[in-house]
Image 1 (cartoon, rainbow, N blue to C red):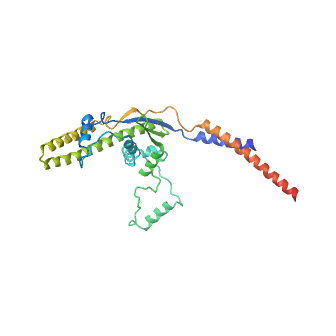
Image 2 (cartoon, rainbow, N blue to C red; image 1 turned 45 degrees about the horizontal axis):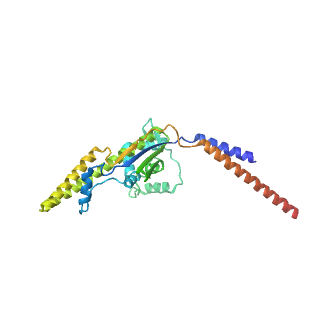
Image 3 (cartoon, rainbow, N blue to C red; image 1 turned 60 degrees about the vertical axis):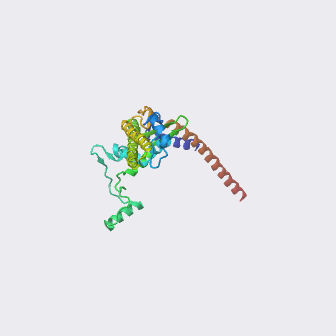
Length: 299
């Protein structure tokens, strides 16, 4: 019995591991740009120290690691990536017909899923009762929220505070696409942060120009002119984009080896687990048999 249980479990694990899809991981390492290296340089730092406390003024300084990590994990950035690079057919390739360039249509079948039943009832009642979530699909076609949930599973962002670096990795079945998706994150992050910097600088400049005409003090005017110059400088530096908010230390590359499944490890663990389970089962059955024999003798 012990041999039979071990052989069955090991064969089942081996068969299952063979049919599992290979997963590859591509990783990039970045580091935030300090105020001296980033936009504005020493002028931005000096102005931020002297005039950063003025009401209505926000001076963009160095990008913190926590800000970059939060952006990489945010749905705003990930939705931009999905829309810009059309990632839904890539993430759900099993539902995508590459020849027809369209989603595979699932056959109509009866479903006991409460959400599906509610949607069918709403359609039957009339168009005046609408689906509260218009992006949700009831025909098997993935929506943006499905893509966001999938990215949450395959994208990992880690903040290494010791050396002030951030690692972003993507696990996917295609090694080339895994590296491309990491690159998509870096490019979209750069565009998003530079766009936000330009927007903030434009808002600050408008506010400063209004304050410039509202004051007659020449000293205050000179300070406002310096602040306006700093906002113009920030806008110009954000146009460059490269190394604006972060620097890429290790760019993503297509991996040559899978990270999972670890088939040999799975077989060894299944063998050990099955052996212990089978031995425990043998002792348990023997114990039950002894209890039966003892009960028969007592009778």
